[in-house]
Amino acid sequence: MEKQMMKERYGLPPMPPIATGSSGRRTALQRKKDYSPLKWDKYFEKKHDVITASGDSFRVYERGSVGPVLLFLHGGGFSALSWALLSTEVTALVKCRCVAVDLRGHGDTVTADDVDLSGERMASDVGEVVSCLFKKDPPPIILVGHSMGGAIAVQTAVLGLIPTLIGLTVIDVVEGTAMDALSSMQSFLRSRPKKFDSMEKAIEWAVRSGQIQNLESARVSMVGQIKSIES
Image (cartoon, rainbow, N blue to C red; front, side, top):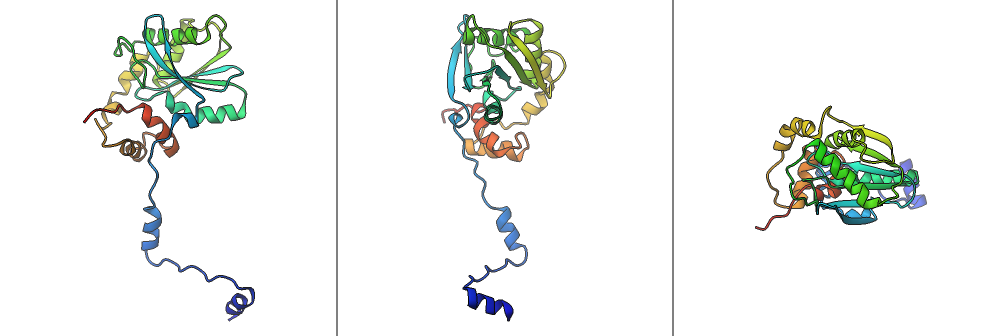
């Protein structure tokens, strides 16, 4: 009675009907997620290809223009776009320049020998990319590598290929060379489907399988992990 009087006095709108049983819960759970791909330029400011002296072409993404460089090296089977969300977060906190590279045999990088994934070869690639990017005046550089990328980062540091290296961060890394890291990931890579009907299906699989737990990250990074083929 009191509620009815309050409604009449203040003109309150009626309460929405309460879902009964499990149908309401099912509706909420089945609310469709957006698996459409996101463009790289929402996260990076620049995309270009670095051509080394050997003629190999390495795809590079950059964000920021001042401060030390965070040079990101992705894991096996991933790509430079795996660092998209982190790059936006880091540059919002500190003045720095984020540079992410598609490593040999990954993403949009094209080399004369995409199957030579030895530690020495891939570390040399990183050194060459840095040399081409910054010429004779490289800024302070911090290497950040995930999994296989971590092994490559360590190898690059050990070989002294970046003269202005001031820091090294490795995430979920396997001890040894890049090739050792790749070998440990064979079962993981074999678990991937050989093809997808669409990019949306690839993104959905990445999230549902747990390969990428952040939906937004999957939407931007899966683009760098899948090759379009002619039907």
